[in-house]
Image 1 (cartoon, one colour):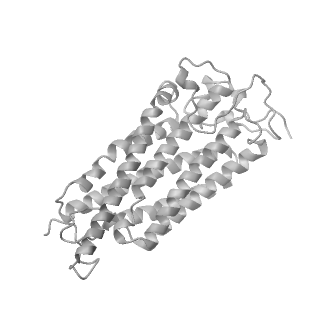
Image 2: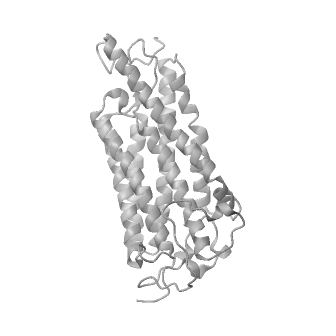
Image 3: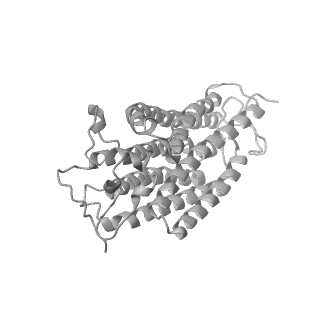
Length: 334
């Protein structure tokens, strides 16, 4: 068997011109560079927010969100190191390359599944008692998960000429694009549900509310993830085989990065809103822009209605450790 990753089923003509070989090499380098750039962003952000992680995740008692956060925070960076091996090793057999491609696909799926579960947890917490919202979100999530597993199991190595010793992943175009649009639909449902719950409290004018943190965190996450998903969806349909999966790794790295940011930002902003003293200067730095400005007033009237966010686990700490009244978005009944 040839040591490269050539698959005769993908192209009936094994002969490549010199220009085609150069183009394939450039495509492979583009995939590698984007993957390393995304991984660099992930690791660098990990270092920047490690202090927040110690204070807000490790010291308080653990909750479900804490464990999900730690899974995404450490399994993905450590496990993804293995995914770089086929990019750097010049001679891989077809069977070894296929094994690495499956591993990479399942690693990407794992990170996105955990991130989606954390966002779904936010929605179910905000709509406690409204089971229809949770069921709709869960149905979209499960559908996306099932289709995604089919895509991962059917992935294969991109075809290259005999002089291009590369091992990069490619997925079936139609079903792979379906996964992207299902993920976009799920993220759109999540941000829509969050905005529907928080906008009545006018987070754009009432800065001293958890509603503002939820709104802006959700929007920042949605904009970043939506952008990379749309670009990847277009590339899966239009780009050459060697470039179809260019943004697959970047999507994972940015999703994990943004999920870490917004998970840390919520309890951090809560501490500021409750005027809890900080022991270190860096604790006053924002985890996610825009910041929530503080005032010396203690009134909490921010809109109509009552919201019982004190009973949820949006924060990686038990509510017994914090003031329950400070999490309410409003204290006045409609």
